[in-house]
Length: 325
Image 1: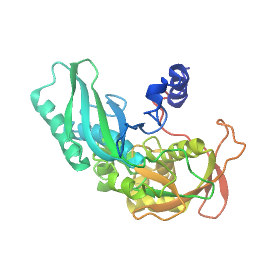
Image 2 (image 1 turned 90 degrees about the vertical axis):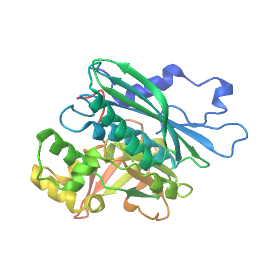
Image 3 (image 1 turned 45 degrees about the vertical axis):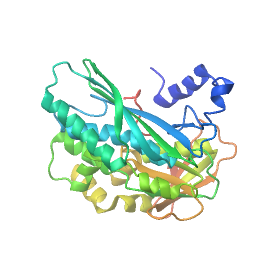
Image 4 (image 1 turned 90 degrees about the horizontal axis):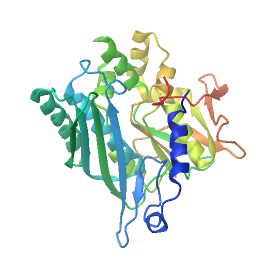
């Protein structure tokens, strides 16, 4: 069996090693966070550089959703990394691998969806690459600017965990798309087809939050990454996590015969924003706190869940992994 996605990221960090001194001086944040940070001599702001790929059969199924929605999601997934870093979007590049026989109507719909997302994010598409291939892949590179980048590391024991946006709705929306259902809450369909890159929330958190991450692979797993990189444990509150999803989470889960808490903790692709902060932040709901992680190895469980009845149980930080089925 191959290693998982995050083990492979760690392997890449080892194989590439530290960059040359002249590069390292200008790149304080490299492999492993939501984006790379480039600090240019004499510049008042750092550049934040990220890339995300959406691949046919892994992120979307052709024929189950419109081309514009596919491209919109691809652009938004990359933009969400800028939100997690507290960066203002600047511009973007796109690299698309498409079937040679894709018709012009479908191509124009892809362009329209990407343009709609770019307009909402505030980062125009300024170039890229087109190539023909057997499997559709939409890669988006985004550049942003910030004077105070937020990182996954830096969270302190006792900091509250705050979330902007719901968790679990996109997982319900995905089921609706794959099964062709029209009875699920419309908020869930929008959460999957047209997710929000929470740029404004990221900018509000910048300078206040001690650590941040966006929720792309599942709330439990992504908060686990933040806690691990900060050298902490974490405790999530069941009632608050469910409250963030609202009635749409509860209704959608009931219609699917699923547990709403499982969808919220492990569903992924909501692109909510989670930050650690000692202070409340406008637009964020408190969902837990960081705890002392002294003595924990990288392999040991870091998460706990406070159930609605007040009991506390171990929380397995699992979620989406590109190299696990």
